Length: 290
Image 1 (cartoon, rainbow, N blue to C red):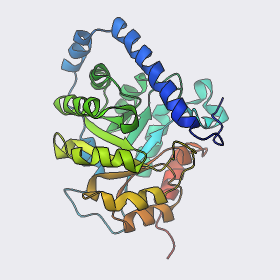
Image 2 (image 1 turned 135 degrees about the horizontal axis):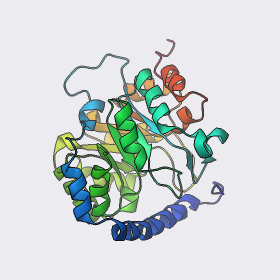
Image 3 (image 1 turned 30 degrees about the vertical axis):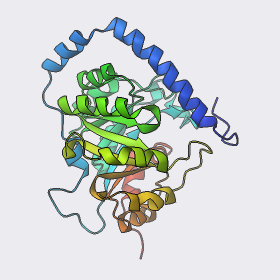
Image 4 (image 1 turned 90 degrees about the vertical axis):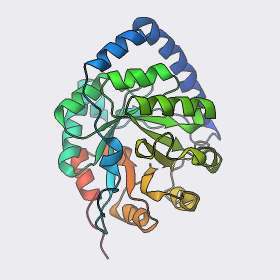
């Protein structure tokens, strides 16, 4: 049952619930799979794809209208429920969606892997990487270093770290381990307080492995407002690694971000609500009318 956005703090309470459930889930997964097993799997894998390099423009000057889109694959969410009726059961095909995104010009893929609340699967990571050459972000609630090892063993090239779910010490430990495993981190913030908390660690432990995200969804009201990024952007010194997330629906939205110096956007529900997410991405990337 989706949360009632009219209830102040509803999703913050849901976030607390999800994190508590995730701790129990991780404890059970640890019992099923040892760290040594994960390390053995990793030893058989090649180097991760360069997620950071795929979405930044550090090696080339972008065209005036160019954006790097991290296109998201998501079946459902606690706030919206099932995104499309046909995503129930076998009607949800992450690989086919990833192929659509690749052909439409996505720079990278974001894949929800939480099963309980988002209907995702960790197995989708390897399947997507086998089908498309793009790097893949594991989007989940990462709260334990064991999950970083698990992500690498599952084929992820990057992981999401949500500032609201982590203490500063936990965040730093996760970022250090991710760097050791050659994973890019996308550190997501939702409000000014957490942006200020994360800002001193931008580029840690190595600049080419860390992206900073501003999510435009208010966790208290569940409203989404692109102006949230635009209000906070002046607080970010290096905008080349800044990712705007949520509430991006039109070419005009992308144009507003570019004007503010933001060249990376993570887009999910607005694409997944369409019958063909790839076609939706093509339309999003079209140059807006003057």
